[in-house]
Length: 363
Ligand code: FE
Image (tube, rainbow, N blue to C red; front, side, top):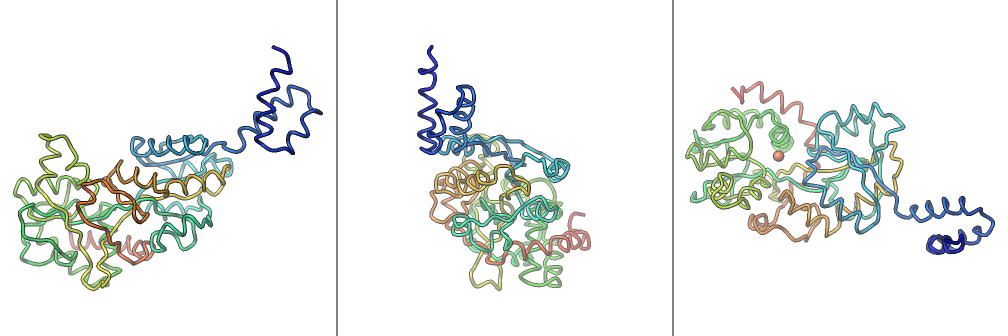
């Protein structure tokens, strides 16, 4: 093959990369030109490193789509535990660009550990409501995980407040997982934020008195125990219902899902009638070597296409308005989110956890 023929694809790359680059070509030796061409061709796309605690199967389809649409390669590191320790240990040579996790507590922990940086993006700020991102632009919500009432299918109940779970009429009828699980400490923190610490304590004591069984197990077990007649109502995340009601007919999961309906609780004194949500979200790493692509990935993840994929993969609720929902999720009706900023609610997490011990909720 002649050197001239070799150069042709490179020249095309240079033309794509810009005429300025092309003008320097004749002065270069073929090998240098070839290297320059490769980097010039790669530069517009490049790569991005994602460190995530999320289950690979949930987010991989989104990342594949991102690469298909933008050309940016995603290097994914799934970190089950110790995300902060790992990034800290890597220090300013950390290859991490984007840090992704679930739960507001975990996101704030990243910020407090000093491993994130503020990102000013009009796309992110226009798409994600202010109560669902850091005021300091250090973290952004990507999807919502509403904490709802599971209600026995035939029960005549289509509205409830979180406060009403303390009503003595539900004595022995309420199921819920451990009070110390982050899903519940976040909810109890929201109760403190809305009603004050004293009212939240009284509430928690009364909910404890209403339990049909020990506060333990998982969220799906609430549906299982409603089917089993142990409870009539419970509190758990909505996305599990998406999984259960979409499960194969005849499976346990499907039977549990079919035994319940979802009612989105509200707070008694909140006129906007918002429901408590937890989130999945992400930050850009402090030492991100590919910051531009990190922002590009976050912006992609709140696009219509990615948001609708998100909402289908794990039945989470899109953070973006007007995105097509999974039919089961759509059947719960539109989600109105508690207007209190998540950072405000998260301030009470520790107090909430102490309250769980104080009232012996799990005993
Ligand atoms: Fe979960």
